[in-house]
Image (cartoon, rainbow, N blue to C red; front, side, top):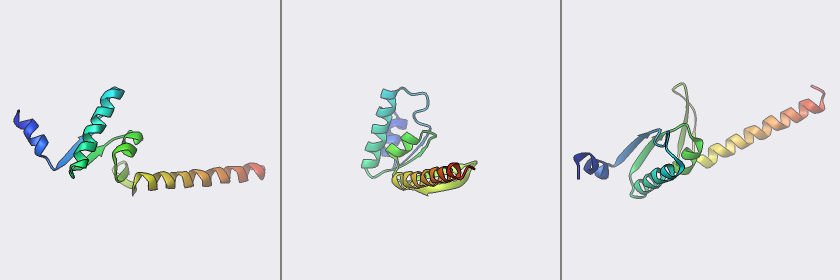
Length: 102
């Protein structure tokens, strides 16, 4: 076993930058399984991704950044609920404008 593999197996924190970029579906799910196993062993995982399905599938908490600035922070469920509420308000406003002729 190489030192790199030994170090990875002993690591307490795993940092991944776009781990599934360019990877096929089977490979993506294999990577997700490794991340889940790593987390299941009580280790910390920090993943940088543009794939919201990946963040939703793997994250306990999500930090959304825009140009390096914090936009939102929360659990996947809390962020989805916030987005749903925002879309509901937007749709209600759109209907009100349509009904008023605006």
